[in-house]
Amino acid sequence: MTDPTGDLEQRVAALEREVARLSGELDRTGQDAAAARLLATGADRDVSDVRSQLRAQRQLLQALRDTQVEQGRRLDQLEGRMAAVELRLTALEDRVAGMDARLTGRMDGLASRMDGLEAEMRDGFAEMRNGFAEMRNGMAHIVTLLERDE
Image (tube, rainbow, N blue to C red):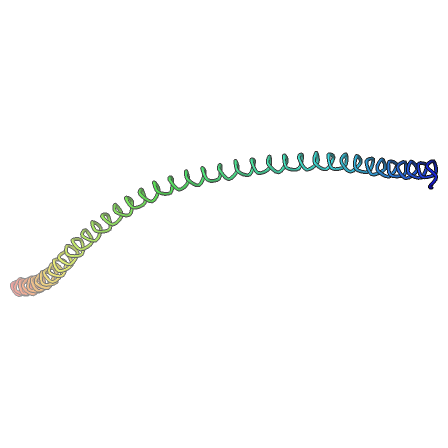
């Protein structure tokens, strides 16, 4: 027969070793759990920071979008105004071109009239010179006649 007390002592010793091992494991598990809670707290803080940054970036992007929409609207208005200015400039260019054509025609008419007046003046001056020459000759003839009678 086996010794009941020896077997019991061995079993109690084995159980005590197992309890000590389990107690150590439980301590390590507690430490691991505490470390995991610490990591979770840090991760929660990190996630909160990331969310805050994402919210700020989302707000920034929305502000940029709003600005771009406003600037797009203003550009559309400016394009409309520029189109109106271009139409007005085209109309002015057409009017200036018409005035230029009319002025060119008038200038050509004035130039030909001036040419005619110059020719008339040349003819008039030539006629006057001839008249003065005849007068000089006539006066010279009168002087000759007067000198003969003296």
